[in-house]
Length: 148
Image (cartoon, rainbow, N blue to C red):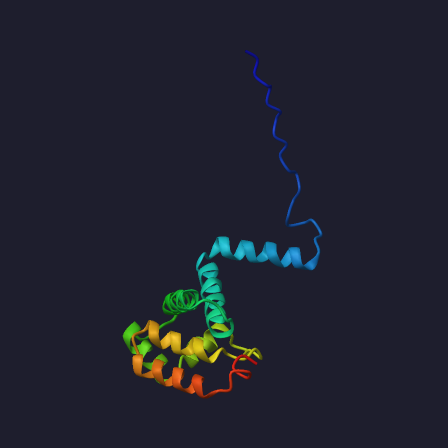
């Protein structure tokens, strides 16, 4: 029985640091290098993306709650924290998750928040009174204007 002869694998001689690339590719390579040097950057980016999905997307409730939980997980893992999770959770609930939103998008998004998703955030942290308050407020909105 004959076996096919394997061809030698060519190794790249491209020096990524000196080769000219389009700006987007260069930024991606720089970001990749940053993430390899500091893996928490990737975790933070995932958490911020999850918070933005929670705040701005209309999806299945279970997916929205998962996005909220994932975002909260990485919000609590951020650097330079001075308070405990329960203390920060109390503040987040009192401010309707304002600090979580600001962490995910410090520039302030022009995309409107999905009002119902805030109620799901309160549901996820067992703040049922606030959850019901947002559900009641949401039901008072005209259904045509709910997601504009």
